[in-house]
Picture (cartoon, one colour):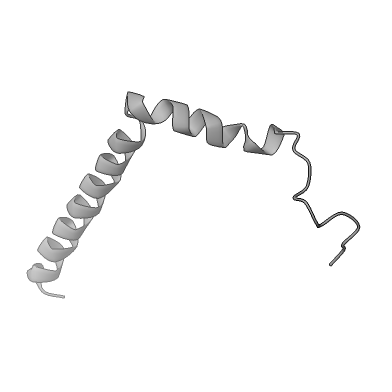
Amino acid sequence: MSSGWGHFSGIVTLLLMAIFIGIWFWAWRPRHRHVFHDLARIPLADADPPAGTKGHTR
């Protein structure tokens, strides 16, 4: 293998790490907290099934 592949893989690793950290910072911004809280509560919601599906099985 040539030394060029080592530099290329290092650049790709740094780029992917920067993308990961950018997404992590974006997700943890305070304005997203209420959205994530609402999404986390969906499985615990006690909702009625949509109208017209009562008794209908798949």
